[in-house]
Image (cartoon, rainbow, N blue to C red; front, side, top):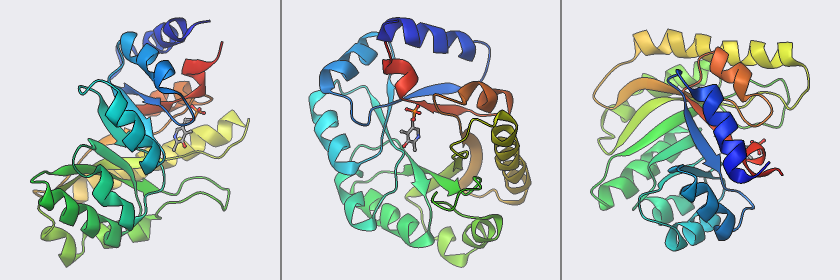
Length: 220
Ligand SMILES: *Cc1c(COP(=O)(O)O)cnc(C)c1O
């Protein structure tokens, strides 16, 4: 199938759900991304800051750029002028740096906190204790140039659909717990970013609002 055909199929699954499609751009060329744009998608997710910079400068300006990969504090300044959502925030220090750079650009940058839900040891993310300690910290109250609008998680890289579903359920449970407990001028949890090419259908059933899909868009 073509890129257009693949996107049509994914959009069919998303129909009548509150979930949006983030087209994952890592390793793809600008020409491929222009095709995705022409097919109607406007939310692009990139893992690496430098690649995002290059693609951002060559593609139409109405694309919303989401940073989905691990972000180092010293790179925040490059994307702060335009990034729409950062999915991968995993520390208070990173939030403070995003706030500082957003302030320099007179912007408020939306962020998701990345939660550790997989059973593998390799994935980044916070556990429930760390999430609560960030959300109830005094420091967060003064960060007027960020807004925490949800959570992001990655399931284990496995074919075991039951395990994947359990991991997505755990993220939804954590979200439901936090959403009632924490609400302020800069914390308003609405989004759950979960689901990739191999597991987005399960993620949608378990309450995802943002699926991050790469290979399922580009495979022929
Ligand atoms: C690569 C990547 C995706 C998309 O993966 P696919 O399996 O190609 O859909 C989603 N989220 C993150 C954080 C990624 O690094």
